[in-house]
Image (tube, rainbow, N blue to C red; front, side, top):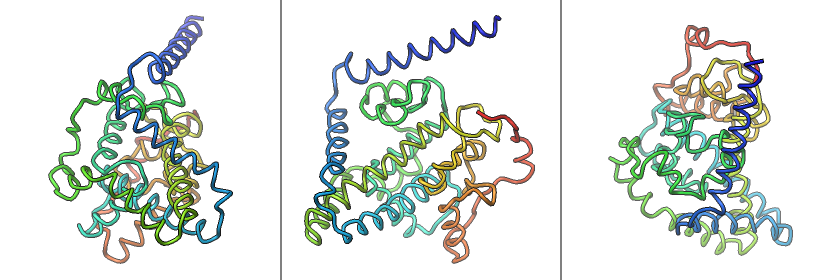
Length: 306
């Protein structure tokens, strides 16, 4: 009876916190210019979904598909996440910078911001200091956290002090300062080559797909799925997200062994990014590739399901 009462109290507290966060994000605060800019950018790319059918061509669709693979698979999953954030493997600098530039074009900010945010997420997973946790509401973890920069600063601080490895490199400082120009430049190039259909599909539809692929890992993979490992957070393995996000959906695996370049730890857990890492290792381009040992797996093993 005591446990039930405590659970009900905790549930009520979570509901109040979610409602308070929704109120803070949209109504009970003064919007900063950066927040308005983020909201405007999100609305702009999502408007492409509405007009995309009127500008459909197979060429434009294939441009979107190819760019999605290049920017999301090579850029976000392989570069931003597994290489830069977690240092799961090493690449030659020229290739590291190339893949990082691919990630830049996914429209999820520059490497310094992305890596810093994700490192904070792992440091404070599903606590009050997590930049994007479902404990403050599903939609907060999915996208609303982008629209309250002051709230983000309260959690993580005004200065990104956990990415000194990137801030020391002139390349990453340069693309941090010029981020928007690179996104605009790709849009102009697509317009010159293929007109509005290439822009709407290659920029708008593709960016929406890429961004929500990442957002769903933050929200869905901390809400629904399996928990084979004893992690101190809400992370789950979600097979559908494993397919959609190139292997990032094996998220409980990842939180259990965040250093690992391999997220799909079972043979049947499809992890396209891992296959790419193995190809690069075979070619001699990826070195010091990290995976969990059997002893590490045994220590983290659990039969619980969330």
